[in-house]
Length: 307
Image (cartoon, rainbow, N blue to C red; front, top):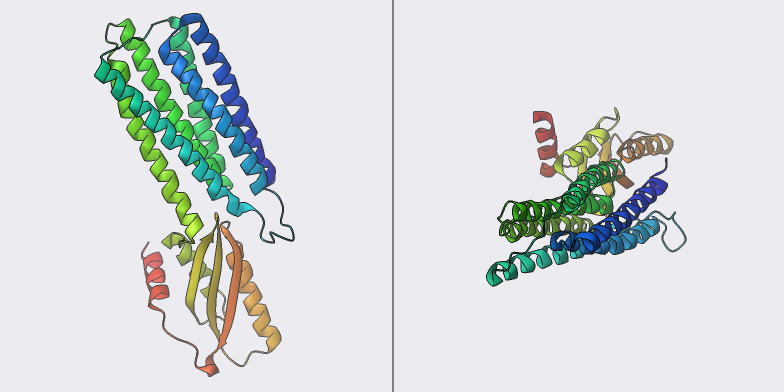
């Protein structure tokens, strides 16, 4: 299945799952009056709203290139991910505020019921499944928005666990466990927001990809038998994809047709790397004196060879 249709399908699954969870939790809250389940129902309702926006964002990012966007719309994805991060920070801040104010007030009221326990366990299982599914799809299809959504689903596993601690603790006579567990979970949620922002800011500011990927780019260029050296290698993120430019060093007695074929082979070899979008190669003939040492390239090859 094509990347666009797959990513949109994952987005639709997330929306449906969140809507169903919100409905079930709301029904259990209406039947039991459990505050823990009620807060989880509100959380799932908020998840439904933001996941709908994420789905619309994913729809935009997977549209084909057009005249105004010749490289496609993938660069929208980091902004979708940052929107998820805002939701994560809001959720973490709310849980932390609720935990602190409850502890200060000394009002530990959490009603125990079997149905409340069941819906919280089921919610945790569903969210764990969504986390693994979204993370796998995000990695497979190089989608930062799906990875961010996966991390948010991991947060929901934690919040469901905190609510479960509160409900079970109430049944055992220790309702104070509810705000204490929520406070610990809130810190994990806030850290997840930091992770999402950190990763996606790199996509937006054109940061360099990891060293192992840069080393692979250099190695593929040097794998061509007519390429004797590589220098001025620049690889940077443009959205979630990578643009590459580099100079290759060749003997100057090649015909124009031969030089063109060498350049095309190197471009195609590097473009075959899944994360790479555009590749720009400049051919330097030896006789022009443009061959030069490049310590950064040599360091990448040394580390790659050492691994």
